[in-house]
Length: 104
Image (cartoon, rainbow, N blue to C red; front, side, top):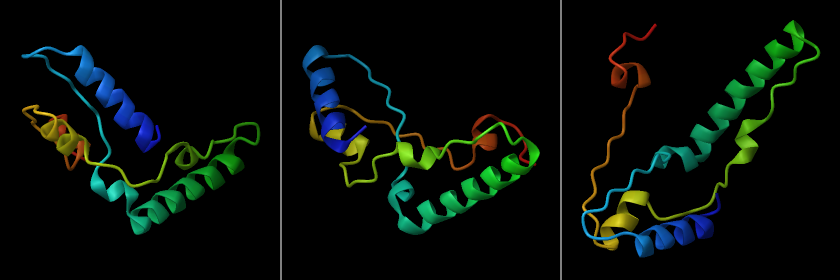
């Protein structure tokens, strides 16, 4: 969602909560907006799309990288801290590690 919509959503959540409430937010890491990181994601997606085009001419892999709003926004944790919330951020570096599985 756009940054302005995110702020509106958070403000509405803030207005509906009482002391002791909990909120969970799944957020993208700061590297997500990095142009180099974005270019690597796009290259990887282009390779996947090329393979799928050869394997199954009827199946098109959508450009999911076009679904994101690449704009500056306040960090989610910082927003909630600024509004008086106690914040715990859990950012797994490797999804296999967080799932307690060995990566292959």
